[in-house]
Amino acid sequence: MENDWADTYVNTRDADLYRFANDLELLKEKVETGTSVFEHGAAPFVLSHALASEGYDLYAGDASPERFPGTGNMPFSVVMHDIEKDALDGTFDAVICNELFEHLRVNLIDTFERVYDSLAPGGVLFLSTPNVASAEGIWGLLRQDRSYVAEEDTYHAWSKLNRIGHMGHVKEYTGSEVASFLENIGFKVSSIVYRNPHQYLGKGGGKIDVRSKKDLFVKAMRAVSMRFMPLFSVVAIRQ
Image (cartoon, rainbow, N blue to C red; front, side, top):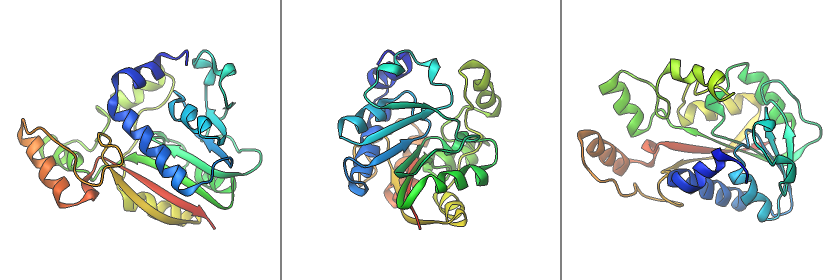
């Protein structure tokens, strides 16, 4: 991968590698190898390579794939596609919208009606996004008067359009908010999986070194419920 962004994920961001591993395992549980998969917002193509190596017929979409050298030599199809503007030709057995929902700033209803139409009947949507109702999110609201879990602030989010070519986090959501939205589009929500990005297929709270009041708060909240994890994935079916 001739891609500095991908190299950063692979070499310095362990939490993202765990997230990609969990994404892969969740899809493998629901979708047979060899079926067609479209991955929206695929850059920097780390999960894309893993999916292709598992034998999925993968199409990796990005609004500006020319930002990344070497996309013409990847072992899957790279498609120039803007999820907020473009419809897809044909239908797919699965569609991935991971760590993308929080970046979308146009018409979410129109966007996800197109996503719905791009799935074959019975096709599966995988959508992951930061959990604003996580322990970290609640701490931010109570102690820092901020509603972001995984973004610095509103100005920083919008400045990314000029700095790196895509939007930061417009808004972060709760699991029930995203599930309700998808059900109104027409999906049947199969599950909401709350996840710890620092733990591979974690079922518990993961280890937290308590060095501050925030650490103690986060550890206690995660011990109460998985709903306070920092990420969640929604699995939904086109009916």
